[in-house]
Amino acid sequence: MAAPESGDGNNGAARMVTLISSDNTRFEVEAAAASLSQTLQLTILDGGGGGGDGIPLPNVDSATLSKVLEYCIKHAPAAANGGAPNATAVDRAELERFDNEFVNIDQSVLYSLIMAAHNLEIEGLQSLVAKKVADMIKGKSPMEIRRTLGFPDPTPEEQAEMNAHMLEYGWAYE
Amino acid sequence: MAEASRAKKPATPSLEDRISTLPDGVLEHVLGFLPADNAVRTSVLAQRWRYLWRSMRRLRLTGLDPHRHRAPAFGNFIDGLLLLRNTTVALDEAELTVYPFGENCAPINSCIRRLLFCKAKVLAVDGGTTFHGPPLISRHLRRLALNSLDFEDNSLDFERCPALEDLRITDCELFTDRILAPSVKHLSITYSYFQSPKRIHVYAPSLVSLEISDNNRKAPLLEQMPSLETAIFSISPKDYCDCDGASGDDCDTCLYSDDDQKTCVILGGRWTLPNAAAWWTDAVSRLLRNARLML
Image 1: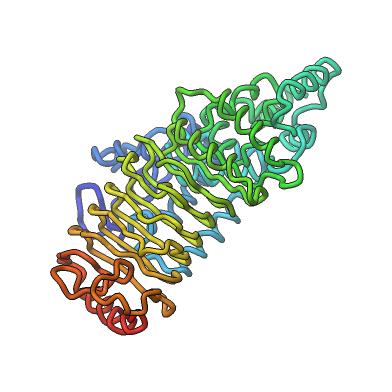
Image 2: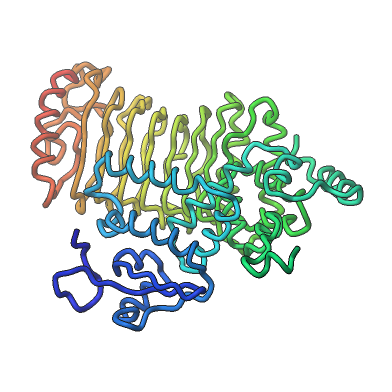
């Protein structure tokens, strides 16, 4: 599948770039997929990341990066189409299925992922994970949210502070 | 133990530590996906969370519990939410769903205006209530989606929303005489009722795409739209004029008149449609078919 190229050096095959995780693992990936990252897009447009060079990503470990790239590779064709016009309902349903499955993971992985998406400025991934975290909180009481997010049960002082706060924010609890 | 595990793998930090390391911007993004009342209530979690909700860029005033958010409580909630909001953060998007309120339309009217004061760029309103009063004012509003509302007075005048480009009206009842949308490029009115005794006039000279379909009663009169490229225009089979042709050429409602530009019954004005030839043919054939029903 020859993804349309935004960069230079069109020689038939899709242009590849290399990304290097914080633990020094190298990932070779199509430039079109990596370009979903606004941060990387600039470097790639400048011709970076090719050959033996590679783009170091000191804030992203290999486990997270491989997950991020899984997302980018899946979403790159749709992004290249400008998001929609040619996409069929089937394509969209397939992407949605992929997305739902994709965020069905441990909370700690979600946090690594959202941080990476934030640093790399991958808008779709940021929203996907943010929505997942929001769904974990939605409709729950403060106590249930604390437990879901792994906060320890409040100390008596914290409990007193929570109660005072809830009084002050009565309008949000009516 | 820590020593032993460090050799293989760093000790796993607690989940609380993990979520607490996320920057404010990321947590605010998360909160923007929650119904606003849920988002505010996270302020009780810890000191860190106390003020995050004030800088959310997206407000979802939806999914409010109808049993717990009676109109006065809703008003209080909106007051708290918008008065304590960080005013330096513009609102990218606001969604307002107000089904519980029925006849009491004051809270939604005031809420819409206040969301615009918060510089909302995208606003979606969904609620079975009436929107009335003076025209909306906003320099920031770009997209407006209106669903299941009644419109009265000048509530569909958007002259003072110069950035508004996209206007969608779905499943609404329009009691207004006109839609005034000088900056709007994309307009759709679907599944709605044109309830005004006169044909509603649509002034949208910047329009690029238009959809008026699956509506009931009198199709609107469209003023000049010189930039129009694509359009879907279908007229209700029940489109009729009360004059029943009796007023002849002078009827203001059906504009059944052969003089100057009004020859085309629905599409008043002189039109240039460079890229809409196919649509034009289709629309005119529909018009001819339906025009008989009007006479």
